[in-house]
Length: 430
Image (cartoon, rainbow, N blue to C red; front, side):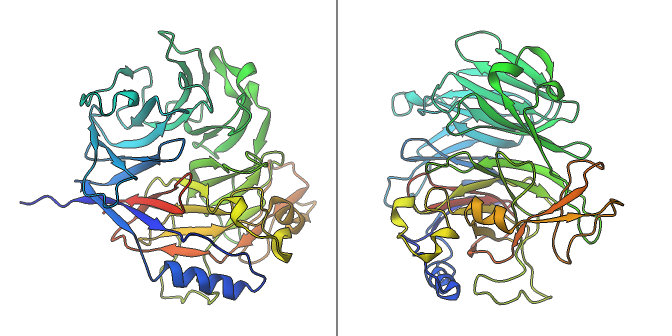
């Protein structure tokens, strides 16, 4: 029986997206360039679900992909027609869920359900065809849910696992520098993209939470994460009916002078949610009640949903220098990533355009209720940090995606922006 080949896809976002006052004209331009052309390349070689894709640093020449067939495939984005992977790494014994290149592409890191962290020597690509890792770390006991390379040092990285331990590694030492313990189990970790001593950690069990930490103050042997928090963020939405959500992934914005001021989460049972680093409450929730054209989604039509698989989220978009000055600069900041992308259960990827954090903060509503019987406006979501809060914060609802990414035949797990080119890589169950 011939095996079905599974794939990652590369979608082209166009070379430039003009900022215009007329929103309908803007979305029409996107639709003409994008929804009519579902994809640019389909990279076919995997033989099962693809759960993770990531681009290399410093130009994004390489795309690494991994999933349920236990292989990590390396694709060369400089090739005119990508017919096959340039290299294959092996070693994982169960499904792959996390991939990450280190700051200067010295190593490729891999983690997944087998609880092992594998480090591959990327500098030997083209010199050696050895597919095996140069080091395997086996102190985690459950699935790996987070890999965070240091922003400048290839020898430093963090790993997070569902068993509740977050390790800080230095490849120059035989043992990790230290580890942080959470009773809730880790589901994500991310270094701040500009301030190397700060990082976000996400936990899932119970009510789940996102916390800001300082590397200089929190690592030792078995330090309790609750004792080292700098800031905790509100993660459990309050709706018109009960909402049950579980965190899947976190991501910082990447570019501009405001780098690291904004981050986003994606959760099972809820919608992608946007925060600023200095505020514990969300500033935006990304839904999809409307089509990119502005028309309402028909009741019979499927739209964004995340209930079946672990999703990944990423910021990206045209570089700030390509965005001209206009009256809408107060709405869309020229100093940060403009777009947020993730996958969906309806066989599509979704991209939202994110207004500036100052605009979203100004539009966020606050509601007081001394009885704490919180009820947000219909169709919107509110957030409190604890039952003792006297104010519920209601973030802006961005209900109209900029575009939807077609071409897949099953659930899309991941959408990753290329660091330089106006392209997005998506992958999923098909």
